[in-house]
Image (cartoon, rainbow, N blue to C red; front, side, top):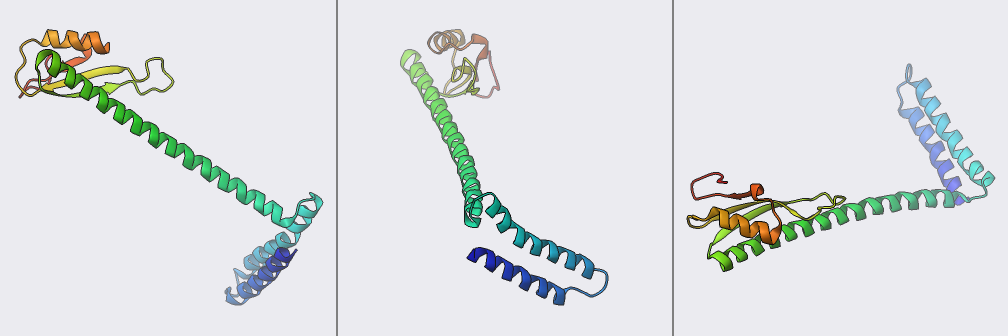
Length: 172
Protein backbone atom coordinates (compact mmCIF):
# COMPACT_ATOMS: atom_id res chain seq x y z
CA UNK A 1 0.00 0.00 0.00
CA UNK A 2 2.83 2.36 0.84
CA UNK A 3 4.42 1.70 -2.57
CA UNK A 4 1.14 2.57 -4.24
CA UNK A 5 0.90 5.88 -2.40
CA UNK A 6 4.50 6.73 -3.28
CA UNK A 7 3.87 5.97 -6.95
CA UNK A 8 0.72 8.04 -6.93
CA UNK A 9 2.50 11.06 -5.39
CA UNK A 10 5.37 10.65 -7.85
CA UNK A 11 2.91 10.48 -10.74
CA UNK A 12 1.12 13.67 -9.63
CA UNK A 13 4.39 15.51 -9.17
CA UNK A 14 5.56 14.38 -12.60
CA UNK A 15 2.30 15.61 -14.14
CA UNK A 16 2.70 19.01 -12.51
CA UNK A 17 6.35 19.28 -13.57
CA UNK A 18 5.55 18.30 -17.15
CA UNK A 19 2.76 20.85 -17.21
CA UNK A 20 5.18 23.63 -16.30
CA UNK A 21 8.06 22.47 -18.50
CA UNK A 22 6.12 21.63 -21.64
CA UNK A 23 5.73 24.36 -24.23
CA UNK A 24 2.26 25.75 -24.42
CA UNK A 25 0.47 25.21 -27.66
CA UNK A 26 0.67 22.16 -29.88
CA UNK A 27 2.31 19.73 -27.35
CA UNK A 28 0.25 20.55 -24.30
CA UNK A 29 -2.56 18.16 -25.29
CA UNK A 30 -0.11 15.25 -25.74
CA UNK A 31 1.60 15.98 -22.40
CA UNK A 32 -1.77 16.10 -20.61
CA UNK A 33 -2.83 12.84 -22.28
CA UNK A 34 0.41 11.04 -21.33
CA UNK A 35 0.19 12.35 -17.78
CA UNK A 36 -3.42 11.24 -17.49
CA UNK A 37 -2.57 7.74 -18.74
CA UNK A 38 0.23 7.44 -16.16
CA UNK A 39 -2.11 8.64 -13.42
CA UNK A 40 -4.82 6.14 -14.39
CA UNK A 41 -2.21 3.35 -14.53
CA UNK A 42 -0.95 4.30 -11.07
CA UNK A 43 -4.49 3.95 -9.75
CA UNK A 44 -5.45 0.79 -11.69
CA UNK A 45 -2.38 -1.39 -11.04
CA UNK A 46 -3.14 -1.76 -7.31
CA UNK A 47 -6.82 -2.37 -8.09
CA UNK A 48 -5.88 -5.17 -10.49
CA UNK A 49 -3.50 -6.71 -7.97
CA UNK A 50 -6.28 -6.58 -5.34
CA UNK A 51 -8.73 -8.31 -7.68
CA UNK A 52 -6.17 -11.03 -8.49
CA UNK A 53 -5.56 -11.50 -4.75
CA UNK A 54 -1.87 -10.72 -5.03
CA UNK A 55 -0.15 -7.92 -3.25
CA UNK A 56 1.23 -5.05 -5.23
CA UNK A 57 4.75 -5.92 -4.11
CA UNK A 58 4.29 -9.60 -5.04
CA UNK A 59 3.32 -8.72 -8.61
CA UNK A 60 6.45 -6.66 -9.09
CA UNK A 61 8.64 -9.08 -7.15
CA UNK A 62 7.46 -12.00 -9.29
CA UNK A 63 8.18 -10.02 -12.44
CA UNK A 64 11.61 -9.05 -11.13
CA UNK A 65 12.43 -12.64 -10.16
CA UNK A 66 11.36 -13.87 -13.61
CA UNK A 67 13.64 -11.34 -15.30
CA UNK A 68 16.53 -12.27 -12.99
CA UNK A 69 15.98 -16.00 -13.64
CA UNK A 70 15.92 -15.39 -17.39
CA UNK A 71 19.18 -13.45 -17.19
CA UNK A 72 20.72 -16.22 -15.11
CA UNK A 73 19.65 -18.87 -17.65
CA UNK A 74 21.20 -16.87 -20.50
CA UNK A 75 24.38 -16.34 -18.48
CA UNK A 76 24.63 -20.02 -17.59
CA UNK A 77 24.06 -21.07 -21.19
CA UNK A 78 26.77 -18.75 -22.50
CA UNK A 79 29.14 -19.94 -19.75
CA UNK A 80 28.44 -23.56 -20.68
CA UNK A 81 29.08 -22.82 -24.36
CA UNK A 82 32.37 -21.10 -23.50
CA UNK A 83 33.37 -24.06 -21.32
CA UNK A 84 32.49 -26.55 -24.09
CA UNK A 85 34.54 -24.53 -26.59
CA UNK A 86 37.52 -24.53 -24.24
CA UNK A 87 37.23 -28.31 -23.91
CA UNK A 88 37.19 -28.70 -27.72
CA UNK A 89 40.26 -26.48 -28.10
CA UNK A 90 42.10 -28.47 -25.43
CA UNK A 91 41.02 -31.77 -27.03
CA UNK A 92 42.29 -30.66 -30.45
CA UNK A 93 45.58 -29.52 -28.97
CA UNK A 94 46.05 -32.80 -27.10
CA UNK A 95 45.27 -34.83 -30.24
CA UNK A 96 47.74 -32.80 -32.29
CA UNK A 97 50.46 -33.33 -29.65
CA UNK A 98 49.66 -37.04 -29.59
CA UNK A 99 50.11 -37.29 -33.36
CA UNK A 100 53.36 -35.32 -33.14
CA UNK A 101 54.63 -37.68 -30.42
CA UNK A 102 53.61 -40.77 -32.42
CA UNK A 103 55.41 -39.53 -35.54
CA UNK A 104 58.50 -38.74 -33.47
CA UNK A 105 58.46 -42.15 -31.72
CA UNK A 106 57.58 -44.33 -34.71
CA UNK A 107 59.38 -42.59 -37.55
CA UNK A 108 61.74 -40.04 -35.98
CA UNK A 109 59.88 -37.16 -37.62
CA UNK A 110 59.75 -33.82 -35.81
CA UNK A 111 56.68 -31.95 -36.99
CA UNK A 112 53.97 -29.46 -36.24
CA UNK A 113 50.47 -30.93 -36.56
CA UNK A 114 47.18 -29.12 -36.94
CA UNK A 115 43.86 -30.85 -37.28
CA UNK A 116 40.15 -30.38 -37.65
CA UNK A 117 37.55 -32.36 -35.73
CA UNK A 118 33.83 -32.86 -36.10
CA UNK A 119 32.33 -30.27 -33.75
CA UNK A 120 28.67 -31.16 -34.31
CA UNK A 121 27.65 -32.15 -30.79
CA UNK A 122 24.53 -33.90 -32.05
CA UNK A 123 26.32 -35.99 -34.67
CA UNK A 124 27.48 -39.57 -34.31
CA UNK A 125 31.06 -38.67 -35.19
CA UNK A 126 31.41 -35.81 -32.72
CA UNK A 127 35.04 -35.38 -31.74
CA UNK A 128 36.44 -37.53 -34.52
CA UNK A 129 39.32 -36.15 -36.59
CA UNK A 130 38.19 -34.98 -40.02
CA UNK A 131 41.56 -33.79 -41.39
CA UNK A 132 45.20 -33.63 -40.38
CA UNK A 133 47.87 -31.24 -41.66
CA UNK A 134 51.48 -32.13 -40.92
CA UNK A 135 54.35 -29.71 -41.32
CA UNK A 136 57.63 -31.64 -40.83
CA UNK A 137 60.71 -29.81 -39.55
CA UNK A 138 62.86 -31.60 -42.14
CA UNK A 139 62.08 -33.16 -45.54
CA UNK A 140 60.11 -36.42 -45.45
CA UNK A 141 60.44 -39.02 -48.20
CA UNK A 142 57.90 -41.61 -47.06
CA UNK A 143 54.61 -39.71 -47.21
CA UNK A 144 52.54 -42.84 -47.70
CA UNK A 145 53.90 -44.53 -44.57
CA UNK A 146 53.16 -41.42 -42.50
CA UNK A 147 49.61 -41.34 -43.87
CA UNK A 148 49.12 -45.06 -43.11
CA UNK A 149 50.22 -44.60 -39.49
CA UNK A 150 47.78 -41.74 -38.95
CA UNK A 151 45.03 -43.61 -40.79
CA UNK A 152 45.54 -46.77 -38.69
CA UNK A 153 45.84 -45.15 -35.27
CA UNK A 154 43.49 -42.17 -35.60
CA UNK A 155 40.98 -43.40 -38.23
CA UNK A 156 41.48 -40.43 -40.53
CA UNK A 157 40.79 -40.96 -44.23
CA UNK A 158 44.08 -40.96 -46.16
CA UNK A 159 42.77 -38.31 -48.58
CA UNK A 160 42.25 -35.97 -45.56
CA UNK A 161 45.85 -36.20 -44.40
CA UNK A 162 48.02 -33.39 -45.76
CA UNK A 163 51.78 -33.26 -45.47
CA UNK A 164 53.38 -29.92 -46.21
CA UNK A 165 57.06 -29.89 -47.08
CA UNK A 166 59.17 -26.88 -46.31
CA UNK A 167 58.41 -24.27 -48.96
CA UNK A 168 55.34 -26.11 -50.31
CA UNK A 169 51.68 -25.48 -49.58
CA UNK A 170 50.16 -29.00 -49.58
CA UNK A 171 51.44 -32.37 -50.73
CA UNK A 172 49.21 -35.39 -51.02
